[in-house]
Image (cartoon, rainbow, N blue to C red):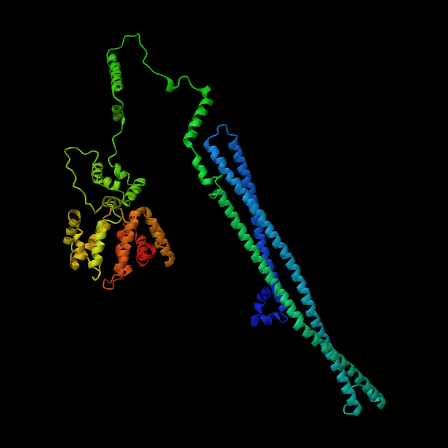
Length: 607
């Protein structure tokens, strides 16, 4: 271990609480347990990685076997088509992936085994440090035990000497009958004996005390710091080795994934090898079907039927019997019809056999792929689309004529150009991202209505609303932007805008997206609800997305004006049922939350 790592290992000792623990009699137990715990945790990681290596090895082996058997099956097929060639090439990729998995498994297992060997060595080192520490702690404990015993012996000898002295001087009567009969010489000798014992005990106590002090100094200044340092160094080594092993494992995993990626899609420098995606370009199903049919016909030629309908000409045999009355007419009529049919040109026969065209062909295309084509047309700017748009109204009018209408039936009056129409059809006709009625109304409201209280809540005049509808149908509505309008007129224009959304053929939020918006509104956390609304709005069709974006930004401007006195919640309650119609009360509550999110976070959701 380097000096830098030593310093890092001893950073813990700057903590006074830690220092008191490790240098106390608890230091050995706590440090030893800490090292054991670190080794146990690292072993758990090794167990996981070894099992993972085993799984990848099994995966490699099973994938290799499967690839080989499938490739052999394709190889021994009698008719080799582009399908078999492409699939064989695809399986070759899986063989390479199998080899990658095998190499990864072996490398990962080798790394795990090396780390396991390191942990075994660390376990031995831990035991060695523990034995050393226990030995030094035992030396100190033994020295203190000897000191306590010497102290006890000295106290006993001292008590005996004091008692002998007191008996000799008569200060104290002897406790035993034996001392009463002893002479002064005997008492003097007893005093000398006890004094010798005291001196010997005192000398032994001094020796044991000095020894205990010496052992204590060595333990506190040499041995404890030594084994604390060794324990901490070992912990640092285990930590560093674990980090190094996990870095190596991470790089092996990255290398495995990278090799699989390069196997599936080689870099441009590897021109000699195609990517897996590219090999499917060689798949020729039409050619395969032709090859199979020719091959199968040749194979089954022996079982062909002589009376095959495709090669049999059925004719009416010549009868020798006299025909019944009327039969000649019948046969003749059939023959004549057949001859007349044969004389007809091919185009006339096709016209006779063709079914009448569907009445609503254009509207039928409005669903699924047809609606997508309309949407893409509405957002393109090509000159060819402008030419096509000129014919769209006539085509729609012609295609919507009832099938069973007669010449005597009066023609139905033309419907409104703006109210009750499909949004995509309106955008297609106007060649715009946002309908002109929406653009003009929001512009007028923002120009003249942001000082009016209760905008979108206060109702307008029915007569003025009808007047403005007529203006949009037959006049020049652009003039509204430049005119000076009264508050009642602004309220009426705001009401007309709500009427437009209320009368759309399909609500602005399509029925196919209804549940997605309801689920987004049911999310409890506001941040997660914002992300959910962002996602479902992005999933809307292009036409609906553009109008939702335009209206969200417009309503956000309205709520920011203090004079309007319309909060986010108020606007959401008003506009929620207009944007998503025919909903239940719980769905309405959820969608109201969606509209609130659109207004509060419109510039985040719509960038």
